[in-house]
Length: 153
Image (cartoon, rainbow, N blue to C red; front, side, top):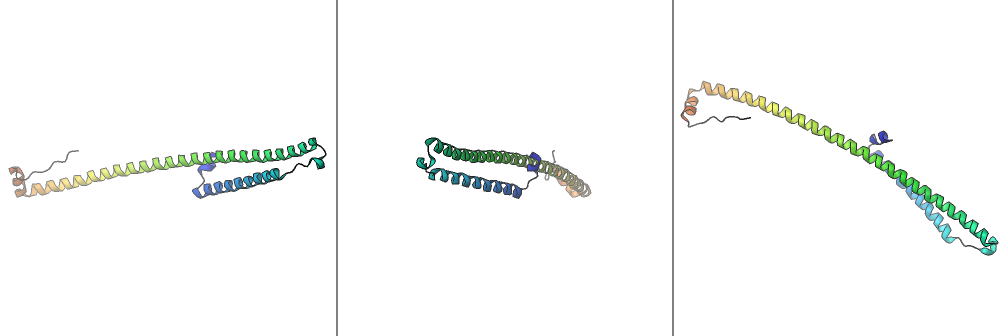
């Protein structure tokens, strides 16, 4: 079931949760109906013949109510367990996506650094060629009026 929850889309998870909410509402309605019957039930000792017969009839109502409540509680536990499994799957997927995104970002930064270093090397070599080919620029640098910045890594 855990693998199934990891493959559910957000819409599918919402549909599962919606179905569970509808079942909960149905069970609540059944509990309310039984409670109404219980509240509206009048013990007529004269018709039942004795207090023992009336007690047996009431006991049947309580058993039916207890069965409905037990079903409701069991369904709630199942829904909670399924929700926790789905949440755990979604959290695991989110962690994986974040990890993959961080790896992609790191690789792109590394590639950008390499590209910057390559371009800087081209610029340096062109500047060196220009410097060496212009006698006036060499004289300015040598005189100290103009300095060539160094690139430290």
